[in-house]
Image 1: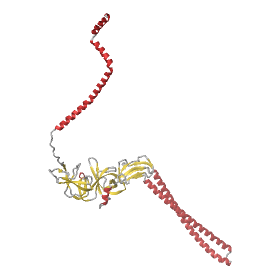
Image 2: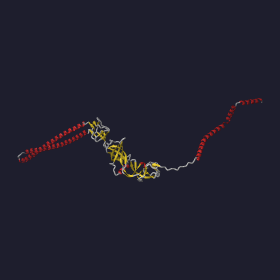
Image 3: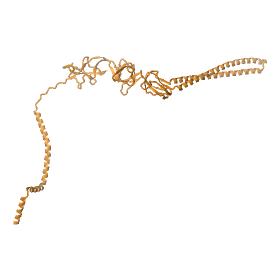
Image 4: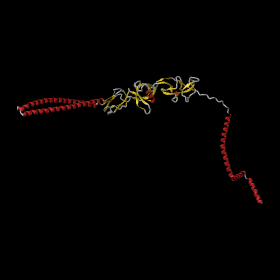
Length: 468
């Protein structure tokens, strides 16, 4: 027993001598090993509580804000409400006056050439001379020389034709002389034939009486036959000469025609301007060899400039139904050249043959009376056209801002708007011509309102209180 007690006594001091940390470590280690399953469940519970706290905190903040808002709203002081006032619009108006109006149509068009030709060479040859104005943009006068073509070949042909004519005329004279000689010879032969027949008639009775021999009668009969043959031959020769003379006269006529043609070709070596014109598209220069029908230049008649513009179907219909015809109406042409405004007078001369497929309107052509004044105007200019419209009777002129939906206007009566149905009959510059349920003196609203309506309260500019 003593050794066992010694062992226990030895163990107790050793246990007491160990530090507390070591003891705790041993205890914790043993506790951890013993309580491992319970620690894992505790950590999961802590995590769940942490997540619930993150969600609950914003909800609690929102709930508190809602509670504060509800409390403030419930405890706010009452504010006295103001009665709603009627809106009043400040507007402008003009009085209505019915009258007879002849408005003007403002149209736009383009100047075009009334006459334009491509001058072409009538003969072939080398150009030896050109006019000083034969260049693009040049101006030429009626009869002014444009080009000269070398005339040598044409002069030679003319001289040759004239020489052939002289020769043919001489041959004709020779033939006529031969015809005259043959006619004289025929007359002589006929006289001889007459004498021979007389001699035969005398010899025949004498032969019957035996005064002359039968041979003598035969000889005289032979002479008559020979003279008949000579007369017939002479007559045939005369017919031949007359036929030849006819042929020669035809040849002479042909030569005369050739001479006329040669003279014309020689004249055509000089090409002149057929009218006062502007020059463009020049194709001839000195030294160039031209063929027949080669283009020399394009000429635009500077005294014949027209305006081409379009009328809508409604505009054309009004002008046609008017007392005056469309053709013959005078109009004013305005050419804006920057700092200057040039005006010209023109007259409608014709109407287009077809209706424009793109615009649906009718093309109209008017000729400018004097294209040279105040400044020469050329084709291709964009111009403004002022044309008197049809005559409108018993219409009122109102600004375009006064008409709503192209069917009604508003009049100011005792400070309130009243609607009136109208019909737009036409235009007058920027204004409209209307007819309808309006009376002279009524004041029409001209200020544009976004929400006009029956009974809207307005106040006219320059007045106080209700407008009238």
